Image (tube, rainbow, N blue to C red; front, top):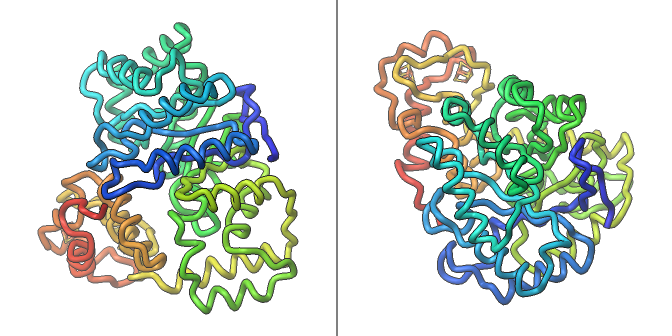
Length: 388
Ligand code: SF4
Ligand code: SF4
């Protein structure tokens, strides 16, 4: 295993972190196959992984409810006496906060589920701009100060899928951030905060953890023929997982890549890759860019995310509705995109809020019939998340 400094936190983390949102399950997402999952965690830790990441809602029945991932991780660490060897990361459910006391309420529940007195890295989970504004109003920064002072939390940060300007705004507001978790893979360089966000994190010496390195597995499953042809031209032959992970570890602004692993084979494969120094040549880097361009030809519509149609007077988040639809087509993965669609876009900003007033039509730079495209989005995702 190879290790990196996690920004200014002083932590030395394995460059592969163990994400626990896709553990093996039986019949439902909430029903973790604990025997298999324990073997995976044990193998991971014994072979160098020192960071485990979980969150309040992981492995819950609903998308954002009380999940079993923290409970399982807590039991596992306690039973195997691993707690002190592990950097434990979990996340505060920002969307559930309604009053100031809720921050402590959920933290105490999480400490209880995790069977520990302290959390090494506590992230405000999946901050959207409205959630950030809400928790800011509820004095979240005072709460974080108190957590750090009491020792219940050693390092604080946030996870987010927001655009880079908001990321920078949040980073600039609080000097005690030490970690940020953002989405990144070779398809997403200019999606959400992307490479510009990573560059800023490096500048301010905030540790960068990466989520969705394999795009929920879509970069490594059912590889389209057009993509495989490009990989076949590489100077160094790599598996799709190697391409995706080594791409990230070739960046000097990536400290730790979280992988949500589902089987022991995946753990073994990822650890082997994480333990190998593999410098990607300029020629092979260009192939990665070519693969990304090829994936983009599978998009569901021509929206360029330019934003000229916004704001919609009826509150529809046109850009992100069309974008999640596009990604679902590009990656042929409705479930992963549906999770993003329903968790990142507010109820009253989804496609079914379009009233077909046509006010946005003259502004579309791509001459899209936006309400028609939104109708396709609605027909594709529906009005509630039922993809488990
Ligand atoms: S047509 Fe739909 S998306 Fe466009 S402005 Fe009207 S409500 Fe908003
Ligand atoms: S104006 Fe058209 S291309 Fe630009 S973001 Fe809106 S829908 Fe997409």
